[in-house]
Image (cartoon, rainbow, N blue to C red; front, side, top):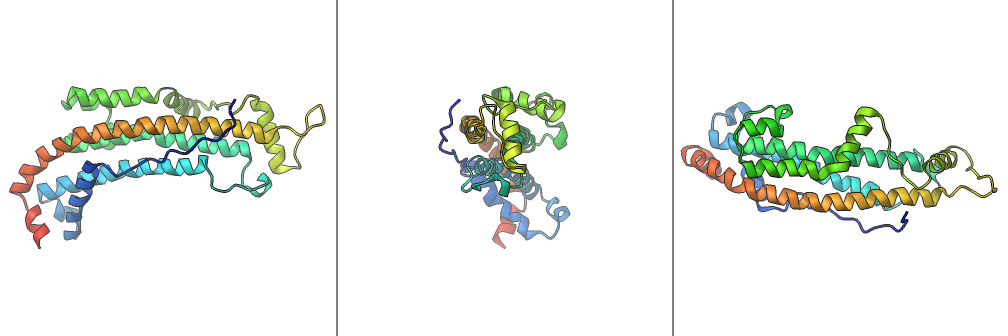
Length: 256
């Protein structure tokens, strides 16, 4: 297995024109004291509610850069005795955070689709099956399903880890890596039958590089998928917002 560190891919989270437009419109919320007051105006409420769920999605995407920071740490201790967890446990934590946050991006995307199309679904009910019942365009539904399918093995691993308790192997000799990392962290290291120190550094790098590789590949694809989604949602938002705007108070509030 390779032990050569990769270059980190940093995700853009809010650079799309659709995101910028919604963020700009969300300033209307500052003109109201309460949400109940804002909700009396259809145009203001629509823009505010879409911004709330879009912000949830962009924050979740941005949090994946936090995962990147864990996989490409700027500084690590010379000795893992100075670290709160062992090398093996650190990779386990990284994998947990990566899988949980990556897979949940699609859930956040479906909530956004529901909000833009005014489906009135509770967050937990925003599934592809329920969105289909709300007459979401077939091309958009197919894109959401494709996003789920593209998560593939990582989605399956998330389910196995969090629902079934199964763990991944991080190296070419995972049992040795587990034992060596625990002895390194808690004792004075460990040696093999030949009297040599166990190769904990090499095995650690194998696991870390594999996570880096999976992260970069998944994130590059995710950004392309989200850009397509935003391209599709932008005109739908305008189609619904424009008549509300003409009939409502958004322009008057913005001019005050």
